[in-house]
Structures are given as structure tokens and as C-alpha cells.
Length: 77
Image 1 (cartoon, rainbow, N blue to C red):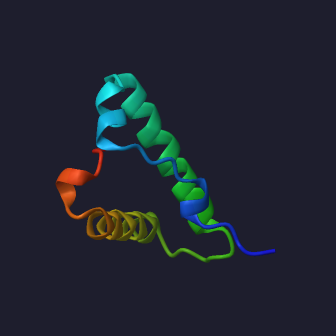
Image 2: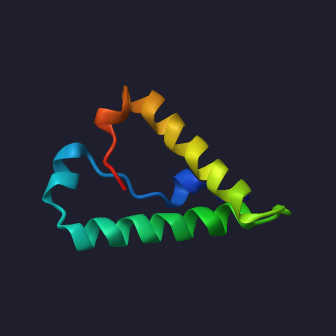
């Protein structure tokens, strides 16, 4: 069995789908994605501090920007 990755549990929206969410739904999505990210990245890793987890999350966001062709194509969290 392979290890679970963040991409396995991530919920992505298209720009059109994101536009239909109200602010509370967007906040819920951000909170759930952050919790999922911290849980997945914490498995089997010894983090020195919270900043390392936040840096890893930002690296994931940068990868999304590259994959989706720029910041404008990624729903804001």
C-alpha cells in the first residue's frame, strides 16, 4: 500500500465552481485543506516547528500555480 499524499485528499475547484461558493464555504474549504495538509505532512515526519509545515504548504501552492498556468487560474483560499 502506498503512502497517502496531500493530492489524494485535496479538494480542488475550477474557477467557475469557486465563484459559486459563498465566503463561509471558501473559509471552510481553506480550513479543511489546511487541516488535511498538516495531518498528511505530519505523518512519519519530525517537524522542527510550525513554520516548516507552513513553508511546505506554500511550496504546494507554488506547484499548483505552475501546473494551472498562473495565480489567476487557482482559486484563492
